[in-house]
Amino acid sequence: MVSSDNLRDLLAGTGAELRESVRLADLTTLRVGGPATVAVCASTDTLVRTVGALDAKGVPVLLVAGGSNLLISDDGFDGVVVEIATGNVELGADGVLAEAGANWDGVVARTIEAGFGGLECLSGIPGSAGATPVQNVGAYGVEVATLLRRVQLLERASGAIRWAEPAELGFGYRTSKLKHSDDAVVLAVDFALDPSGTSAPLRYGELARTLEVTDGGTRPAALVRAAVLGLRAGKGMVLDPADHDTWSAGSFFTNPVVPHARVDAVRARITAHVGDVTIPTYAAPDGVKFSAGWLIERAGFAKGFPGPDAAARLSTKHTLALTNRGAATAADLVALARMVREGVEARFGIHLEPEPVTVGLTL
Ligand code: EPU
Image 1 (cartoon, helix red, strand yellow):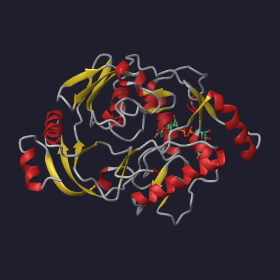
Image 2 (cartoon, helix red, strand yellow):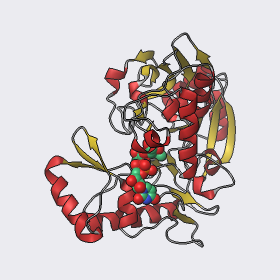
Image 3 (tube, rainbow, N blue to C red):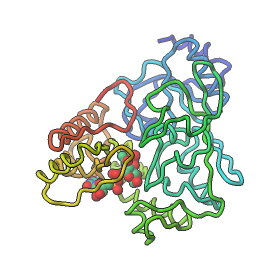
Image 4 (tube, rainbow, N blue to C red):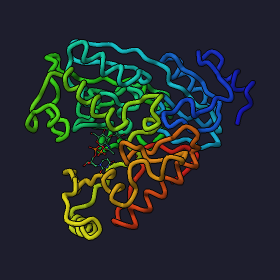
């Protein structure tokens, strides 16, 4: 690591504000993570200069914005955490342009208040606008990839800034070329919206039922936003500092996609353990998507597992969220994640993949 004096010299003139011995727990929604030096970047120019200066000296960089998809080690980060604290949002005639650090739900709310449809199903998701393309954030049948017009990137190797088209970003279910790669930093996102204020087609059963639409129908975006916020809150998926069920990284595992060739065998195995029930599944491009939350619960991990005294437990509202009850460490969460993953694998032969990015630890 570079000394703090050297770091001050290195970042002088970038506009970044340097903070030492910051608890990274305070920058993440799981509220775990040890100490690090943080460079707060309040403008896109500052962000570009800061990443450029650190990269030029080979200083390890961890980018953090909303902190809602990160599980950081209790040892912290040995390098510099670059906090993306940008936030400009510009509404156009048929879309919205947001800087990476803009609060995502704030962006969604503004578009809907301004009469645009499109983003309503993605209401109430914690985190920043710039993080949404990285893992192709999705909820209630809509993924950001379907609405994104372009993504502004800083290419770290060359220092070039350019707009990338969705087609080159390799979007898939909760993934893109930007995930698990440090090659580029998202600086801004540009979404195409519907100026009529009509929602995207409503295809997710639970939401369609709530709004009494038949599959693929639409409703005014504001109405859909309110319904989504209600559903999410009921599952503990809207941040609330007073509710430990929301001290999470959202879904901790992605829903596993089982290749067509294995689906019958997996179904038979589940039925053998659980009985002849309806197993919730969804169509996926390369197979059938099973519900991780459902599998976790049927593998013996009930909501709230392992019980009220544990520092880290499953949310009492949704088994797919691992939560910090106030005093959990990253190690506690890792231990719980491993137990759940191994339990599901042992019972159903399905391997769950974590959704959050891990820093300084592996599961
Ligand atoms: N279920 C259980 N037990 C639970 C929770 C759910 O058995 O404790 C069952 C439900 O009964 C339902 C099924 O699991 O049959 C699916 O549950 P839900 O509708 O809550 O959706 P999910 O598949 O668990 C996904 C996304 C969420 C997104 C919702 C709504 C993933 C990994 N998760 O959850 O995204 O908000 O659908 O669209 O794709 C996130 O990615 O962080 C996230 C919260």
